[in-house]
Image (cartoon, rainbow, N blue to C red; front, side, top):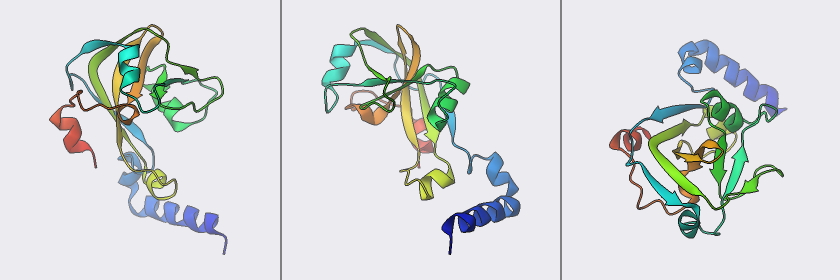
Length: 160
């Protein structure tokens, strides 16, 4: 039995049975924006890098030619990309020495049902909206020890 047609059949059946599920984001990941979710502030990149496991962070630039969902979502919401502890694409660069502005806005990325079950996603994740010299980026919360950066209760309640 070929599993791909079976999965497609199940997805189509679910969509036809529960049409609102596609609208609600079950089948497509999306970003939820939480303005004023944390205390805004400034931090030198060297201080942020001390809070990481490896001492390095990478700028993953969102580009229209990248068909990855994170690039699509970033561009759709006006972000230049994301910041991760490792590179995703060969052209990704290390975070340079600069001042990082934590804007106070946070973002929750809702994983789709397909990402959760087929792709093995852990579910929702959250990001800090930071402003760099090059523009606004999403800094993944688990890229560094974020125990000193408190998120608003609304965001934490919405995580699953």
